[in-house]
Amino acid sequence: MTDTLTMPERASKATVTDSLSVTDNRTGKTYEFPVSEGTIKATDLRKIKTSDDDFGLMTYDPAYMNTASCRSAITYIDGDKGILRYRGYPIDQLAEKASFLEVAYLLTEGELPNAAQLDKWTEDIRYHTYVHTNIIKFLEGFRYDAHPMGMLLGVVGALSTFYPDAKHIEDPANRYVQRVRLLAKLPTLAAFVFRHSRGLPYEFPRNDLDYVGNYVNMMFSIGGKHEPNKVLQRALEILLILHADHEQNCSTSAVRAVGSSHVDPFSAVSAGIAALYGPLHGGANEAVLQMLDEIGSKKNIPAFIEKVKSGEGRLMGFGHRVYKSYDPRAKLIKQTADQVFAETGMNPKLEVALELERIALEDEYFIKRKLYPNVDFYSGLIYQAMGYPTDYFTVLFAVGRLPGWLAQWEEMLMDKDQKIARPRQIFIGKDERNFVPMNKRA
Ligand code: ACO
Image (tube, rainbow, N blue to C red; front, top):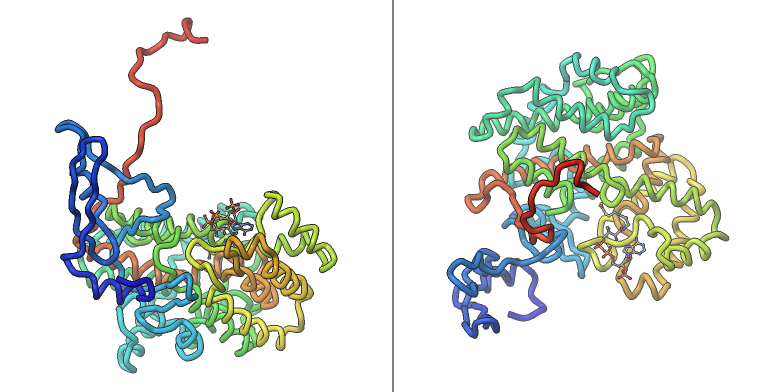
């Protein structure tokens, strides 16, 4: 196998004759393990023992830096070459030509829909956009300044109680209904969360509008009126497409891990939203804007960069576990930013961001560590120009990522290799000791 092959090419070339020989220097024994698809099975290592009662060798891999937790046919990334494909289709072609619902179908159902399939898919989703009005009572329980992501993960989890049938995850037709429900209802919930933050009356779904048009209308309609801006709506749709899946990222792994207990999909997706909330994941675009505010103007950039290099904080929106070159999504987002700012006028923070990127990309610290702008570096600026508040950005990410979570959940359930997610540990605590009564404790 050569290094110039892509992962799928390597996988197709791999044969069972590929193997790995390992000599255990503790015992002098040699073992041979099959190598398939560029991997060995971690459980094969358990055969390496020093004695019969030895548990066997394990791998230590905090944060799963080098562990494939599944075989997946959904999203392909080559981090060094900056390639991202959903089901084989390059992300730039999908961003240019597809609608978000087409991409959602592609991810969850496996192929691009034909015209009849897309009609049915769109109709099914349209039919389910309303949520039970009791959800509004839950929202009213949140404080006026509750973070939108905290509210969203709460109400999505709560939906599982409205659809107890969602527990029947063994039934494919039932799983389809739950996928449709989630895709239909998440924009409604996401808009309700926004209206709650603003103290605005809830705007109910309008099923004469398309997916993005309806979402934007529920967000911004005042007194039942909203003048849609088609350029901004398409820009939002592109951003949703760019976020729709990203293979085994933190939130997707959370959905898979929680879903592996066979809980209903509303609960599993709620766990994904919780993971996305964190500032090292979906929360980063919010953090980028805070960072740009903190920097204030171009003249303060060199001092800020020095602070980052000395270990005081990070350059938010830079760096990625997988991409070690320019994130292909960041390139497309930069193009989208131009279209949006032509409509809304220039965001003064964009100048700071462009200069920050220029300086960072020339700086030895960032070059050496292969730190490039990621999807979050420019997305926040666009969202802000479109009128979304900073703490709402991650909600938009969640709406975009939902098809990916659902596709990965389905794939996990159908995968015969999968069981309940349950890592091992290296125990480093105290050995057995006797209970100490209170009057004898230090
Ligand atoms: N700013 C400054 N230094 C950085 C940054 C950054 N944004 N990211 C990584 N580094 C440095 C680390 O300090 C480390 O340096 P060292 O080798 O001298 O210790 C080196 O680069 C490697 O960093 P790791 O933390 O090991 O990289 P990892 O793959 O674990 O982290 C992550 C990836 C979490 C995205 C990281 O780059 C980061 O924190 N970026 C900022 C937050 C961000 O933008 N997150 C959004 C990610 S995209 C998404 O979730 C959609």
